[in-house]
Length: 177
Length: 112
Image (tube, rainbow over all chains, first blue to last red; front, side):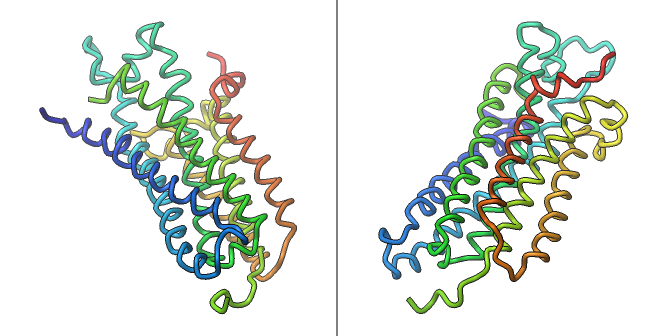
């Protein structure tokens, strides 16, 4: 049982950082959802704010790490072109997918959307993390801002979920190995 | 509650949120424009191993940062119409999602 360097980076990109992202999203979403006057005492706000900060910042940082690793480490292996004369395309996932009409859409739709939509997640998650840091415990006094953060946080997760799901399917069809 | 201090203006929060929307929209715009123009696609290839994607994301992040700095400075100590800024942000995000969607940007793909 062993992993090549490429498989290891694929696991870090998709499963390691992906799992952390999911955990941070759950924590951040619960924190933002319940931060409502009438539901939380002043002491409760003080107690929850650091956890909310950690959840949102971990999600933002993990989102950046995921797209940076994906774009600049894993993606170049995916899109590499085989030298002339090479017939075994297993090490060239993009070319392998495009070589068969039954799998071409995994690249033409799946990868083309995944590689772009994934970058929406860190842009939105960073704005959410900044606003939580800016307001701190005062966020409870700004319900319109809290609602906006909930929407943006969820959109960041949705973008990452689309990218993650497509990534899992593409890896199944043509792994970076 | 004594630890909350003076109420803070919402300008910096609105600036961060609007800038993120601008970043998302520019990402989508670069994606569609690079599909329509091979020359732009080549120009966006900042890192050869990652291809045009490297430039698209660099331009989007730069747009986000510049918008954040400009709006952040302009709204630093102000209360702004937050719901309006957020509404514009949602439109920009929707545009960004659409412009990164392959069936949409393929409509503008350069022929040949």
